[in-house]
Length: 346
Image (tube, rainbow, N blue to C red; front, side, top):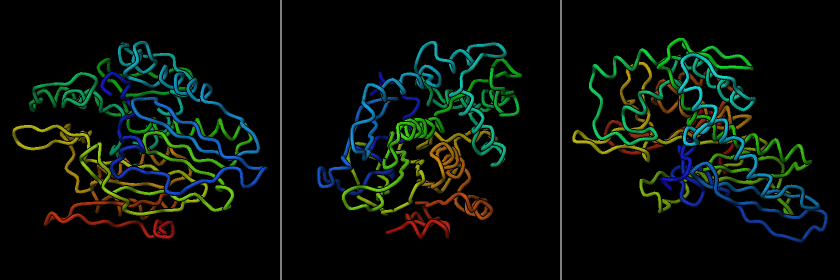
């Protein structure tokens, strides 16, 4: 998939996700004549998407969904030449933006502020330096290079209005990889609701938003959280099954995207404060929130924090529910969750 636009490849698709999220229920067609099952599947944004909805008749088609993803790429993909995000990154100071760009950056800046910079979209120059950008880097950066790049990093260097995004330093560049896939899920879900579809599940690269029920059972849809696996072509089984109601759930993992170097393995999660790969004991962070944009942004921030700090921070955020798979100091893999996540587990 190297030639596909990969800016949303933080997690793989439901075909081969790692600690990702999968629809964990079966559907039957034609039992209730007033509610039919419709499925739309395809490839987009370097991964796959899957839409399941129930309606008396077909209301949304694949060509419409593909058009939505095309428009999102034109705004947010660093792998699409001429996209708005690439125009901004190549600019000296500011770039005119659209509504998609505004909403994603607005939320990213909000999350950065609320997590003391644990999540920061301006970390992109460092991400590239460590070899996780659009061009693979053979040599690792030294301390002098990291120090120089840190001058380009920091959400405070950005100024956002609905019409444009400005930067204080020309070297500041952004990558919305850690949040935009959740936004894509919300855009598609909102499109379904605008077409009077109120029973659906939207999944893009393992990020999910669900509403209503499945028919004919009239039961809420269940979702499986998969056990982490470093083999992208092999499933390791279901870790937990959850039912979240009309909400969204996303997962971020530190184990799948990495580089093997002489000193060991380095993760793609870069600490914006130090400029070096984050040292986190969290293997994967799964977050349930009211929308996928919120969940997707915070799962990255929590992953970077490490387990102790993440649980402390979440104690003051009852609107977010989280589940963690982590590694203990002795190397044993375990799991835990916030108190308000456990009611979702079946």
